[in-house]
Length: 108
Image (cartoon, rainbow, N blue to C red; front, side):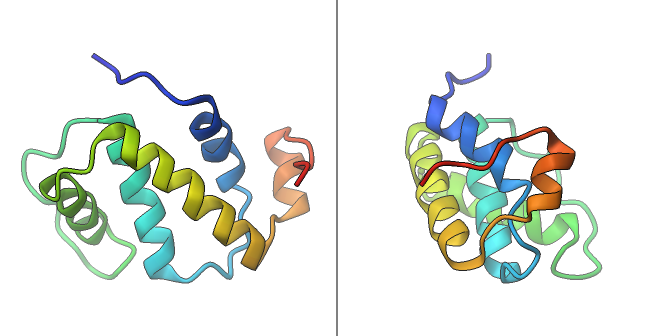
């Protein structure tokens, strides 16, 4: 059964796709893990093969750690929104990507 989504989390997940590509890989990985835990999607049965930091093995490990640390979906959603806001403030949003996604510029 899907976990109820906070409206602020839903909005942040849409806009996060337009974050500038200069976001550091560890921060992008953290954002991914918080997203997965916030949705409370069941973990993989077994970790997929990994061939670099962007591969599923690292993504799975980051998500599994949040799960093992007992981060609830509510906490993950709040942390996701907070991290998204930090990254947006530091790196900005790609305006072309916003247009491609059909999103309007966010009001700060």
